[in-house]
Image 1 (cartoon, rainbow, N blue to C red):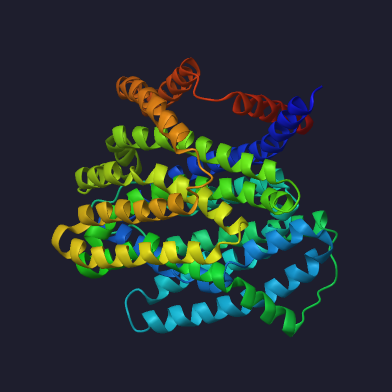
Image 2: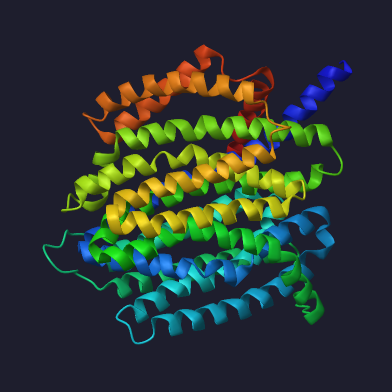
Amino acid sequence: MSDGESTEKRLAKETARVGVNVGLLLVARMAGLAMSLVQIGIIFRALSLAGQGEYQAAFNFASLFTVFATLGIQRLLVRDIARDHRVAWSYVWTALSVVGVLSCLCMAAIYFAKRDSDAEMVALWAGTYVVVTWALQRPFEALLIARERMGLVALLNVITGATKLLSVWLFLPRTVPSAESIVPPVYVHQVVAAANVVGLLLFVITAMLVGRVERPRIRLDAAIGQIRECLPFALAMLCSWVYFKSDMELLHHFRGNTDAGVYAPVQKLMEPLLMVAGLWGTAIFPALCRLSHTDTEAFQHIKATSVRLALLVACPMAVGLGLLAQPIILLLTGGDAGLLESTRVMQIVALILPLFYLNGIGQEFLYAAHRNSFVVWSYLLAAVVSVGLNLWAIPHHGVIGLAWVAVVANGVVSIMFCIGMRDELDFGGLALLLLRTAVACAVMGLVAWYGARVNVLFGVTVGAFCYMIVQLVLGTLNAQERSMARLARDGLLELIDLLI
């Protein structure tokens, strides 16, 4: 075998390793998405339109505190543990003490912010699982990710999702209310919080079994050091959460529960779809930490391939979501008074998907290149654009204005990240990929539109199949990507055989 062939095979294997990890997390996310859709449907059918707004507003308000509860400490743990497994448990126990204190402070802030208001208890229970259990889980999840045990992470996420669905199924009514909420929103948050505790315990036990648990060792100087190193990650997270989450708070403030209820099903559906981009970054980041100092060629190869594949996944999702927005909203809400406007919002917000996926990949590589400040400034600019435009758009144009501002804010980040990676991305190749993808999406959209008249799931399935066939005919994947796909397929099949 020649050196060129050996190098190509090595690059394909390294990328396939990431591909398998992405595949495992993606399968888990798709299973989680399916369960989440059923869960959301049950929750929204048990609440009135105003109740949906109150439920989602409390969730979004609590979510704003997650950045302060963790300071992005998971990324720091993954980076350092991936490079040296010996530091794993000293880092985990120290990080657990940090996030424990920070999450308690966040809960106190939520209490004082909502004290003496009607939403006080709703926000506190939302914070219990959005902030506290989520923050406490992060150090243990980071240990598993750093060791690239994505199969275990995927399995635990599926079990947690199934536990939440089962809890909602058992403890909430499954009928559409005629006027007022059948159950108060606070009760819904209590049910989901209890299920999330089960997920936290599963991650703790699994990390202890995989990582050969050591006795707790917590040093104040190490905790302070972790906080100091996390500050750039925390600033980037804060800015991204502001442009990603503050819109619901502003909508609720200016337009009330009804408009918030119109936006709630759209946002709840988009969140798991957007999180797939985060899963991609989760799978890539440990590999980057291994390769950034040892194999520059593999590092660059993963960058180019990841951007291309992210766009190949996100573009058809955006088109399909826009075309099938009405039946999807109908399925989620049961056809309430906000159906038409929620459909219009969904069609606009679907445009975010390709931008968000590009941003998710770009963020990881900019971090790996030690360009933390560039990421922070990009998200800061997007946050200023989002809040500034929403302060004008929401009072004048309501939820439709909010949707267009979300597209603009994500576009700002995409432009900044493309500028940051302009010397490393093949923009000509990406333009050709987008052209071929547009053709494939057009065929897919036509097939899915007519297929959805029979059944929404049938339309999505045949549309996705047609998309893949057209891309194969057009030859969109290059030789290395086809080799990577075959290796990733073989790796997944071997894992399935092992599990069976």
